[in-house]
Image 1 (cartoon, rainbow, N blue to C red):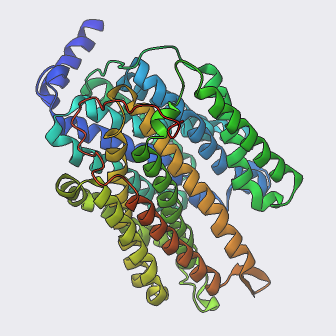
Image 2 (cartoon, rainbow, N blue to C red; image 1 turned 120 degrees about the vertical axis):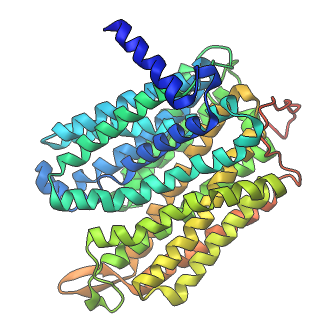
Image 3 (cartoon, helix red, strand yellow; image 1 turned 60 degrees about the vertical axis):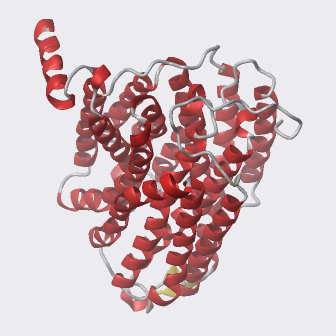
Length: 497
């Protein structure tokens, strides 16, 4: 059996990538990474069609069932910086395979779950697999020739939008016409496929960093993030002035300040804050928070408008499946514009691409003032917004990798992904507050008003303009052609610490 396995592996490598892993075709590597990104991001929208049914399926309350979504966010936020640092130390391909293990296990646990606790455990394991995306983007710097790097980064970044967009209609169709457990069994099969493709087709990427793993930094960042994201994501349920919410946010502030103090003094930090404080990296991360905020606002609002009853005067009365299908083209637009974004970055630099993406997002939100009343109008709004997201998401990793040493690309990209996650979490909280305050009554139910939705879209437009303004402050010749060379270290001054 062992000899058969070896022969089969060699055959597959020869057939699919044209030789040994050292001579792997760039196109095959990028394709595998893109599939991995789609599958990992698919997990975020997998349970959305089940939200209303989860209390009955798991014999629990609606408030408790919301943890099925919250725990995935928390697990992904906490583990992504950790897997990024481990990728720099021990190899990005190895850590991508490690990330696939909890992804597969989480799908299986959810498929077998009959109550709330195992479902939460499974969804937490699925969240731990999200680190696969920034690891894949970082690995491209080690595996591809310079001329292929920009387009490949843009394509892989856009795969996150495709996974999120396709997840809604696929999950809705499966939930409507088959058992909900099929969702998780199918996801388990896809996750196994991704792991096999990475093992067979992606060459080994040796660790480039040195030093010890910062366990204290992991504990500090993890506990601080859990308190911060719990306070932000559950504040509406617990009350923004409740002792629990204010206590969590206060603890988060203290813990993260202490964590920063530690990271600046330890020899081998989890996140090198001196590198993170460089102007290009710092401003790109700030822009990532704002872009994440803006991107998520329209996703929350448009899905609700599509599904609200027509009796409201502004709802479009679509089923979950139909609403998901109306949303799907916007995700595909992200992949369609990735070559354009890569070409723009190659000619004008990723700073220009990030500004352009932010302005296109603002244009999409602005168009909602006249297009909010029809399904076709909302399709145009979401497509324009996601064209901007695709441009912005493709530029941010290029800006990050153009400003950090090769030995820190995985950690830096993972931290950037964390910034986007914080932006989406804050967006959900802010938009949720707006929609909960601006309501109407219909048939004994309290529903968000049309004015609330319009205010939410205007907030999305404003934050997209803020992202463009932040990007303008980037260095005039922001490094973005990630050629694989090491970036020279900047001198550490009082400003950078």
